[in-house]
Length: 324
Ligand SMILES: NC(=O)C1=CN([C@@H]2O[C@H](COP(=O)(O)OP(=O)(O)OC[C@H]3O[C@@H](n4cnc5c(N)ncnc54)[C@H](OP(=O)(O)O)[C@@H]3O)[C@@H](O)[C@H]2O)C=CC1
Ligand SMILES: CCCCCCCCCCCCCCCC(=O)[C@@H](N)CO
Image 1: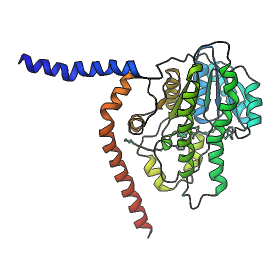
Image 2: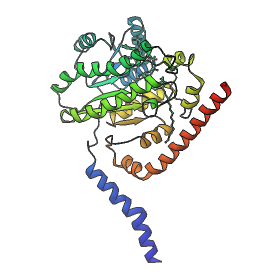
Image 3: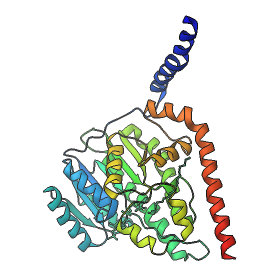
Image 4: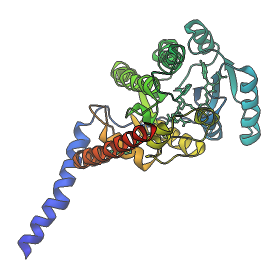
C-alpha cells in the first residue's frame, strides 16, 4: 500500500514538478514583463476594429498612445471616441504602411516608441481562381510588407533608446495565420509570413531587450469583418466557425495582456489555445507551465487536428457534390 502511494506520488506529482523545474531552467528567451503605464504605445490600424479597441484600452491603462492609419477623418473620429471613453488624449498620424518613406516620416514625428503594435490589415475571402492579382498583392503588401516597413522604420531608434527598459514589437496575425483556410490563400500566406518574420526578428532583437509577440485572433466583430462577410464563400464561414467568434474588446484585452506578459504566441480563445499548441513548431516559449502543457498534450492535439481536417474536407466534398 505504502509502495503504491509512493509510486503514485512520484509519477503524478514529483515527476511533473521536476520536469517543470527543468523547463524553467532551459526556456529561452526568459520570461519578461512589459509595462505600458506612462509608456508610448504606437498602434497601426488604430482608427477601427481591433486597433481602436487596443488604443482605448492602452490609454485607459495610462499609456501614451499614438494611432496610425491612412484616413485622417477616421483617425480624428477615433481620437474623439477615445477621449470621450477614457478622458485621455491620443495622438494621430496618417500614413500608408505600404509607403516606407511615409512610415519613416510618421514614426520619426512622434516620441520614441516603447510598444509597436502592427495591427493594420486588409482581408478579402475569395477562391484564388477568381481573386484578382491586385487584391492578392494588396493583402501581401499591407499585411506583410507593411509590417517590414514599420519594423525597419522603428528599430533603429528603438535599439538606441536611452531608457533600457524592455520594449515590445507585436504583430496581429490571425488563426488563419496558423492553419490554411479555404478562401484565404493570399490572406493566410500574408499572416503565415508574419510568423517567419516574428520568429527570426525575436532572435535578432533579444540582445536589445526587445520582445516580440504574435497574436492570433479568431473572427472578431469589427467593421472590417462586416465588410468581408458580404462576399465570403460559404466554405470560408463554415471552416472559420470551427473557432468561436469574439467581441473586439475581448480580443484587444487578450492581445494587450499577451504583450504585457511578453508572450511570443498569444491566443485569444480556447480553440486558439489548442491551435497554438498544435502548430507550435520551434517557436519560443517563455512560460514553463505552458511549455509543460505543450509537451504533454501535443500528441493528442495532433489527433484533434486530424479530426478537424476530416470534418473540413467532408464539408468541402459535400459542397462540391451539391454544386454539380
Ligand atoms: N476582424 C477579424 O475577424 C480579424 C482580424 N484580424 C486582423 O486584425 C487586424 C485588424 O483587423 P480589423 O480590426 O478587423 O480591421 P478593420 O478593417 O476594422 O480596420 C483596419 C485598420 O487598418 C487600417 N489600414 C488598412 N490599410 C492600411 C494601410 N495601407 N496603411 C495604414 N493603415 C491601414 C485602417 O485604416 P485606413 O483604411 O484609414 O488606413 C483601419 O484603421 C488585421 O491585421 C486583421 O487581419 C485577425 C483575425 C480576425
Ligand atoms: C488542434 C485544434 C484545432 C482547434 C480549432 C481550429 C479552428 C481553426 C479556425 C480557423 C479560423 C480562421 C479565422 C480567421 C479570422 C480572420 O482573420 C478573418 N476574420 C479575417 O479578418
